Image (tube, rainbow, N blue to C red):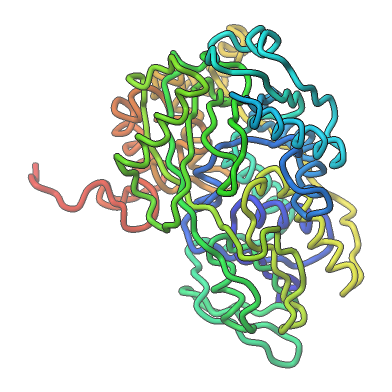
Length: 473
């Protein structure tokens, strides 16, 4: 019997598990995929928004500003890549500048610090490669960039080390309640708990309706992106937005914490993560209005992510109206990543109203990763003396060593696929996108996990990179 069952291991579910792991509770996290952060968290813009965009008084406004501050501290404590690069919302005409004035005033009400409206010259002083047509911009210095899947993984690793049970490959199929106990049936078995937190992302409405009445509707919205080589990573130093519209914050151009340039997304109602010629052309055409000289020929990957748009226009953070003890954190569209830790604390506060919570006497809250390419020459030599595998470079683009890959495979939440290794240590994240190192990572997975080459996965279950042996020696 669990005290709390969390459904979903995206950034919200991982954040909730992290904060609940600080208490003497028995907690399980049920995730349909074979790793954490496999949905919206894995494929998004990776922006920690300052908080000027949400309407004052909304849950979005409150949780965005609070959550952004929390993430800065969490990334420091958990050794997650983070950079406070700031953001610019650029305007091209008088109407845009009116919108920028509105965003500025909205940000002040929301408690965003250091906002400033810039004229054309001030904007170009900060970003010389912006379009000559820009009339001015809103500067939001507290905006930041992060590695979202690494943040989710770090939060869940700490949670697991402190007793939370992560149940991967457990797709929820049915939920019932009897005598104040929930039974959650998954593809792998049944789990019983006193309370349920629904953090199932784009599936949160379907999960709720397995046991409750229809209370909200999620629309799945696809966004497509370009990821450009590091040769383009310094094209801009801030995240560049255009003025937001009714469909969202629009197409952005931004550096990433790994040194690349990301461009996107568009917005299309769809649950298909295939990229399209039309969608990418829209992204490209829109982006060059802000930054005309982007070299799209240096694109190394295109991808699409799905985000959850709900029919209320704000986050849904509440106990179910029809099922006591069932808590929804649903419809978490942008700025969901920025808001996740603050949203998780809402779930903790809700539970405090249901039961008595006691902090653990002993709690491990720090985390440290080896990033070989960031070490000094002396530190590298010392590490290689202790473990020679750190002296063998597997991924040339990102300078990732065999030692780091082995560490990822045997970590607190073990990497079980080539992409899972990539999410943990960046092997395959560079210019060749695994063209050089992918086979070597597969060999290491076979050796370290003791599996057949036929069982090596690219990503989720069913993505085997080999299907049969053609020639027997």
